[in-house]
Amino acid sequence: MGQGAGNDWDAGYRRGRYAFLRRPQEQLRLDEIARIVETITRRHGACEVADIGCGEGLLASRLNSASITRYVGVDLSRTALSRMPKAAFPVSAVCSALGDWDGRPVGNAPRVLIASEVLYYDAEGVAHLRRLAETVRSTVAVIVSCVAGKQDKPNWQTASVRLWRELARAGWPELARQHLANGDLAWDIAAYDLA
Image 1 (spheres, rainbow, N blue to C red):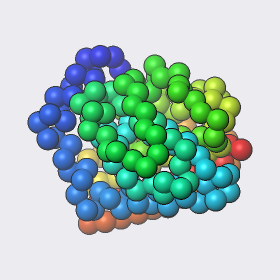
Image 2: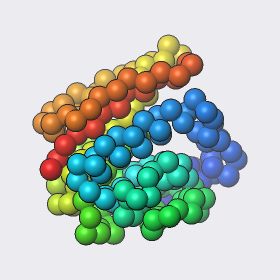
Image 3: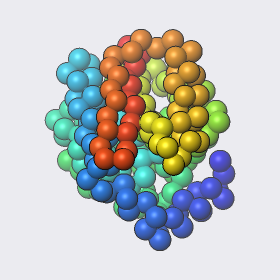
Image 4: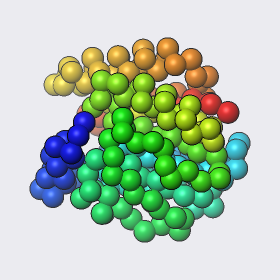
């Protein structure tokens, strides 16, 4: 994904195409991811969160400020990144595709990598996530969420099945797995232990 893709996402954010992500039913996924991050920080101490495909950083406001040393939001859209919220912890914005990101900035705290609703946009998404997890040695956990199949969107089901197979081949020990449903939306969320 290059700058052209970033321009497309910028245009979508400017037009309000992704405003649906603020709907209450979408918040269920973010709340669950924040809960999993809190569980990880109880185990490893305060962590840095790297949110790949963060959009406007909606997850940041749900994180417990006492448990987070920094939030690194990574997204293709400069427009989305410019809308990231203020937080009680440092926030860094990185405009990059997953495949191009080198993992910087890297702090001294353990890192949790989050890839929520983003891996199916890149055919090599899981490979890029594995590269980041191996490159940034402080990574202690990876959290992934994917939309579960919807009847009107069969391509989502195909993409999700492919991703879960690729993640299984990564061989990471699973910490947690959840299936969440809210109205016509459903997500599968898994957390993996890399420590």
